[in-house]
Length: 138
Image 1 (cartoon, rainbow, N blue to C red):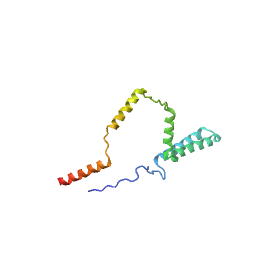
Image 2: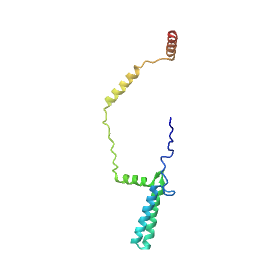
Image 3: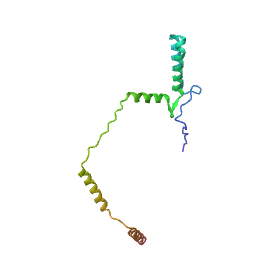
Image 4: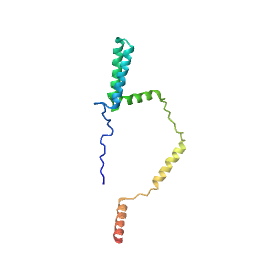
């Protein structure tokens, strides 16, 4: 019979570019490209605060985890939470009259009364007789 090696860490992403995964490298690269693009448009005194914000956001996308969930997933969930309607309607069941409640209670009491009760001695007698009949058949 052939033996195959089963992959052990299938939930861990592969490190492709140094210590970074492909997603992390793309997030950081997109942040760097955005900063370079803004550098060509804005003056240096406006560039630095904006570059820090963009760099911080790109680093958060690449590395930050909140409750073992990646930051992009947390952002996606927050976005859908904000745009989806949150109207919860409780469907109330129609009320039953007092008579139907009493009838249901009476039916339940009748069912409970009709269950035969077995005492400990009857139970042991029954078990003994079954054991004897089983031994006789053998």
